[in-house]
Image 1 (cartoon, rainbow, N blue to C red):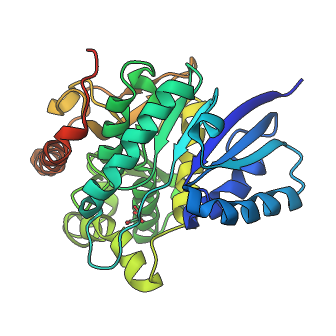
Image 2 (cartoon, rainbow, N blue to C red):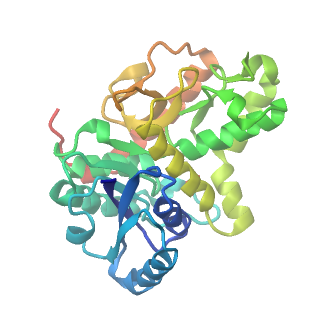
Length: 332
Ligand code: LMR
C-alpha cells in the first residue's frame, strides 16, 4: 500500500496556499509514491471560501489525494498531522517591514503551537512561513512546550536562497543549478545575509566569478529587499515563488543533500557560530541519509560575513525581546 502523509496548510484561502495546495495534491512535495490527506485550516470567516478551494482540489482529480477537508477547528485539521505548514498570517503591505507584524501575528502562533502540541502526531514536522517567520516559529515552538522535538521546527529562508541563486546565476552567465552552497544566515528580513563568500558557481568561487563590490552592494540589497520589491510591483506579496520555496524546503528535508551543496533552513540554534541557543536562525544545513539535518560546522567566515551575521542575529534577539511575553518556558 502507498505511504500516506497527513498535511495541514493554514491560511488555506490565502494567495500562497492557493499556489501551494495544487502542488502538494499533485505529489510535488512528497513524491509519486505518497498519498496525501490534505487538511485546509483557516479562520471561521474564511471557511466558506475554503470550500471553494476544496471543490477545486476535488475537480483536479489528483490521483494521490486520498482525502481533502477544510475546517476552522484545529482539533480536526491538526489531528495526528505529520506536517503542519503554518502559512496563515496577516501579510505586510507596501512600506512595511515583516517584523512590523510581529505583535499582530504573534498570538496566532501561540494558538498554533498549542494546537500542534495537543493534536498533531508525535513525529509532526512544522514549517513556519507566515511572517516574521523566524520569530513566529520561536513563539509556536515555545507554546508547544517539549512535545515536538526541536529538530522538527523550521522556518522558511529557502525563498531568499532561491532568489540569491537566481541573481548570482544571471550575473555569472550560469544556470541556477550550477550555483552551490549559497545559503542564507539569520532572519528572513531585510537584515538576512546570503553568504556568497563560501558559494560556488560552475565550480568556481562566486567571489572569483563575480565582482565582489556588486556582491557586497547591489546584490545584498536586492536580496534583502526582494520581498518588498515584489509587493511594490505586484501590489501583493510573493505567492507562487513562496509556494515554490515551501515545496523546495520540505523536499530538502526528505532527501539527503547532494554532497557538493548545502541548503538554508531556519532552525532552533544550538549555539553554533555565536547564534544564541534557542533562537530560530537560518544556517547552512545538510540532511543526511538518516533523514536528520545538521548545521554545517567549521564554515570559514570573513570579517564582512561575520559582521552581517552579527547584525541579523542582533535583530532576531530584538524580536525575541518584543515577544517575550508570548514565550512560555521550554524545558531545556
Ligand atoms: C517574501 O519574502 O516575499 C515574503 O516573505 C513576503 C514579504 O512580506 O516579503
